[in-house]
Image (cartoon, rainbow, N blue to C red; front, side):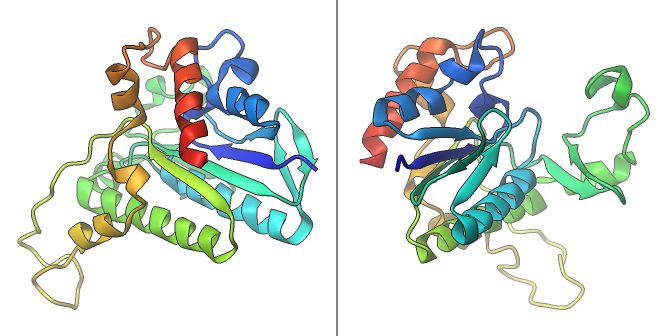
Length: 239
């Protein structure tokens, strides 16, 4: 039975701007080379909250039923799962509207998905506060550490990479961030960073693409050749 290559991420992992994303994105190239089943669950414009939530859901379902679903492949079955995640900007987040999850990127209504979203504008103060660096970093680092520990617990091979975001060193806040608690070393960001997988912290996918001389499409998504090179990189890393 062929192993399942489960990938998740944002528009980059989804294959945005490629002429035939289902065949030209790195997940399909890698799966074809290895003889695996390509099960790509990435989606444009999503947050790390979404990536974490859906991956936990899908892997938990696989552990129980040995099946995984994606829009292109439908349900696929295998007794082996390999997880590859391209984490997006930490400042994106999701929230529950009362009936569905909303992916938020500090958009205004006209800059979301066209006319269908023109009235879906979140209260500005709420969005600005949620997209500050401190809560964004902490939330994403917790997601990555938690998911990596979950996969390791169940003996599932995985590879996590930072797609494009450049993390900065953040000073500790001068104000108290919790109603009750200590006043020093409140965030734990530097300690959390050291617990992240090495492949996430060493650099970004975009850094690698630029380093090897490949390029990007008009909306800053990797070209077909860049996807080919990234699949070759991942192939070596997964060995």
